[in-house]
Length: 95
Image (cartoon, rainbow, N blue to C red; front, side, top):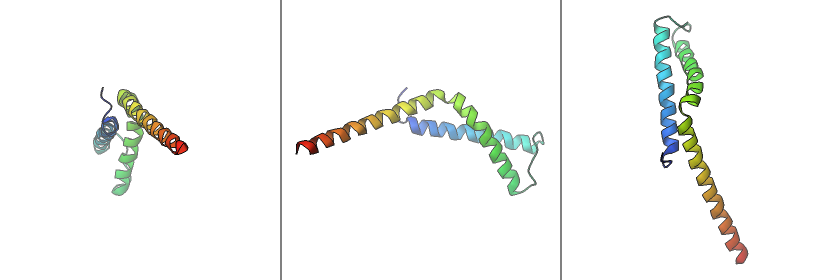
């Protein structure tokens, strides 16, 4: 798996999992399977909160490969940056 756009891919998939959870919770609240808020804005906040609570563990389990790829990409970038900084320090010390 390419790690070039790993962070973007993980973020998009994470938002997708959240959107799917939001839609499912919204339907369940509309069908009165789950309790709703007092109406209006509190209902939307209730659905939002439930979707966040459901999407977090689902994302943790379902997106493990993408999260690992993103982590590898970030570690590689940090290592390259550290190497460049060390090279710059060595050049400054020699000068």
